[in-house]
Image (tube, rainbow, N blue to C red; front, top):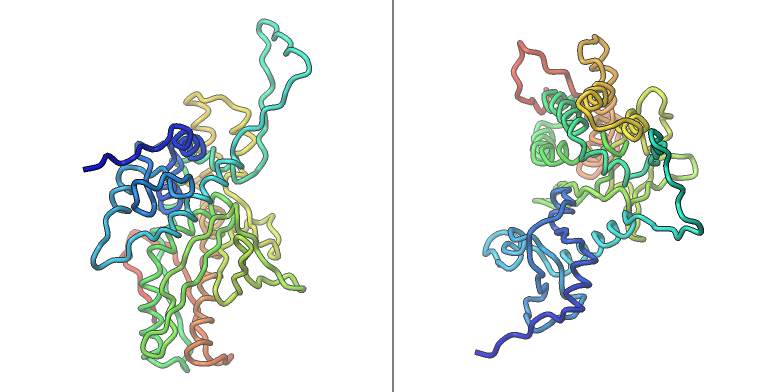
Length: 352
C-alpha cells in the first residue's frame, strides 16, 4: 500500500497558527473557544489533498463524528464545516492583541508603585473574556437557573381552532429547549439573533429550527420608523419573517434600542480594576447577581429577560397565525412566563 503524503510543514504551521488549536465545531455548536486536543482534518476525505482550504483543526470527538457518515441522521457537510472554520478564523483575528512599536524604552516603575488598571471597552471580545471568570460564571448560572424554573403559558383567542392550537403548541414544545438555552446569550451581550428555518408539513407552516446567529457578524436592520425589519449576516439579509431578535432591556435602555443592555456591563469596570482574590470574586458575584434577598430582585434581574423572550415568541406566534390562518386582528396568541413558586408544579403548560 502506498504511503499517503504527509502534510507539508509550512501548511501544517499555517493551520495551527490560524486556528490556535481551536475546534471550529466546538466554537460554533457549543460556544467553546478553548484550546482542544485534536488533529488536522482533510475536509473532503482525500488524504492526498493538502491544500490549505481543505484542512481544519478539529478536536478528537468532532473529527470522529465528521469522518463518520451516519445512515439516518444528517452529518456535517463540507461547506458547513468550511464556513464554521472561516468564521472561527475571523473571530480569532479580531480578538488578536495589537502590538505597537515603542519609540522609547519603557520607564522603570518605582518600588511600591503599580501601573493603573486598563479598563477594557464594552465589546463582545471583552464580554467573552469576562465569561471565563469563575465568579461571573457562577453568577450567570444562578440567573439561568432562576429563568429555567419559570413556567410559560400560551393564551389563544376564541377564534383559534383547537387543531391550530394543537399545532402551535407542538411547534413551541419542539423549539423551546434549544431556544431557551441559546437565548441566554442575551444576558451576556444584551441581545441575540435567530434565523427561523421554515418548512411545510401537510399544508401547514412549521418552524423547524431557530438557528442562533453569532452577534459579532450579525447586524440588526431597522426600517425608516426604527422598527425591526430583519437581520444581516455576511452580506445576506434575513427578512423579519425569517428572523427574530431577543433583547434584554433594563430601566435605562430605550425601547427603540434593540441591542439591549448586557448584564456584564454592570461589573465591567470593577472587573478590570480589581484583583483576583476571593474577596474580589465575592464582590463581583454580588454585583452581577444583585441582592437575591430583596423583594424586587426578580423584577430587576429576571423580568427583563422574560420580557425579551415573550416579545420575540409573541412575534413568532403571530407569524405562525398569519401564515396558517391569515392575518386578522381577531386571531391572536400570547405567551407569558410566570415565576415558579415552591407550592406549584414545575412542568410547563403550553396553553389554556
